[in-house]
Image (tube, one colour):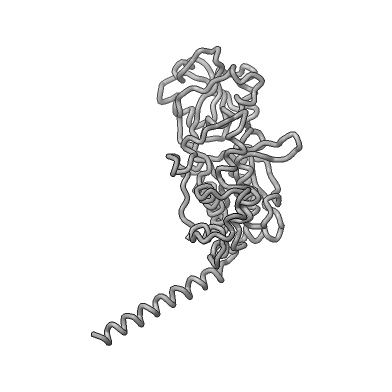
Length: 348
């Protein structure tokens, strides 16, 4: 019995030792993927973004890109290069998204793109975590006096071509056996302008996008969004399937920003947490001999750069969407601890 117990202890010790060695080896032997390597060699991340949706991706008066989606490009640049400003932004219209990601023209994309089965497979991409949960709606003028899509029967709805929006609204019209014309436009700006210029009675896109255009109109009170929601629109960054290691960096950068909000770590107070004894926060920040970025082949304290230079998830949301003229409530984009859908796996 004693010999058997000693043997069991020795075997257990051997298994634990081999496990520890394997863990260290796995960390030391991370193979940097081709996209990650070209970003490092170039010293710059090329990120496809929107340039026409206020709050999410737009060029401001100073000629700089800003917005909710834009900030996630900056976060990935901070993670890989240690510099959130080391980004070259490429404006991408909806119809060109598949082409630019497949051609290698961009390293990643963060621009109002819905995660779907066909895109995940046919585009050959890996979607990162959903950064914004949305749904498609219909915007119109208050003076039209309608409250449902059925009341638009015999009229028209402007829609952007080459999008899930176009497919969804066509399905909604067909299912209800309505006679509604669908004039199409190449991008968000022209769709909105088509509606403003009387090309249609209403217009459709994600509700957040409708809100962005209505809020920045000369007289926002002239417009309204119907209560109906016609789809699920999980929006988030994506990258080519050719580099799963780079996709992991995007994934854990976003997750890290979510956890930072959970823990109350912001761009303003992060230095207060660098000497923390909380093991979960130590793992997030890569301090106290805890591996973090080393699992991904980048700076072990990559989340320190991300949080310090870009902020946590809540800061990004509030800076771009939580302020006037949008003042968009978090809703389902609140943390899971506040009843929302925003949730991240643990850094462990």
